[in-house]
Length: 380
Image 1: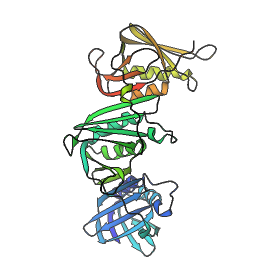
Image 2: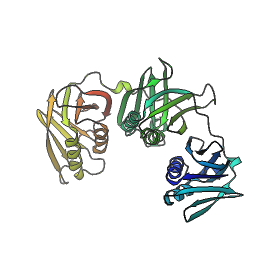
Image 3: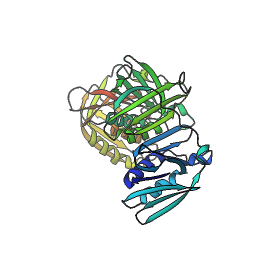
Image 4: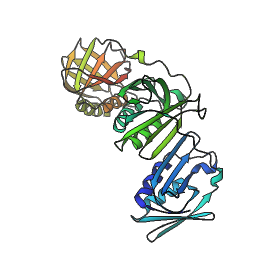
């Protein structure tokens, strides 16, 4: 195998493919990346850990076609450190040599014939704009659980109904839901999938940032490979992931049909105030919000402890209300909103509140993204 490729192209491709390599691979070959140089002038790099696979294709000057398996993390470190010159890669026997300007590295190869075959990409289920997918996933994954003892809640539920794609995530203390438009491959399609939040977040950032469309491909395991999986493809990059197995809780019903009290506050002003006031809040101590006509007062701390308070302008529709939240969870929801104002909708102080975005202090909110947050019971 012998090929030449631009340094930046190689570094970007290797870094993207190596991002999901296991830190403790069950077998040594899974720590490697497969380099596959094709005589047509294409270099593909691939990695797989039996759960998530990644494959990227880039243009290269291929003199001799061939395949080799080398340490993925070491290759990524080397590729990033090379000077900005063309890189020549040659495999000879049990070694792969990289030459770039005056720099020369030799890497030991691993037996490529022992590397598992990458799963096939399922048939396309539809296409979504990459920037929309990136924003939507970022808004939802903040609410996904990080507790691996409850694997179902570490996932994001994807619901497809015709030309609407809905993403949901919860950790039992908050719930995020985003609805977005997409172009289904089959009109009127209806299906669901549970994808690991960590994987979905990485995919959305890396594939959606290019500005083009992202192909989403779902397999329920009844055909093809017989494995329930999801695939994403954009810009010559392709990744697949096994789906999370299990029944996701019916969380949509948690959103109240009506709200007795609604308040609108400047989003950035509220974010800054929560951060300041929560400086005196000890671990797991809530921030209290008291809504009255024209303002909201934020308070933290009590008794002999450090205390803080701050008042902000707010519009209130309904009776005055006092409620308390975990400040970190509240900031996650506020940070996920893309609008200048936030609407907080309440039923009562002991029931979950719903955060939605709003462009102006007066007018309608945007229900496309909703963040439901459980309140913290206040002492006394």
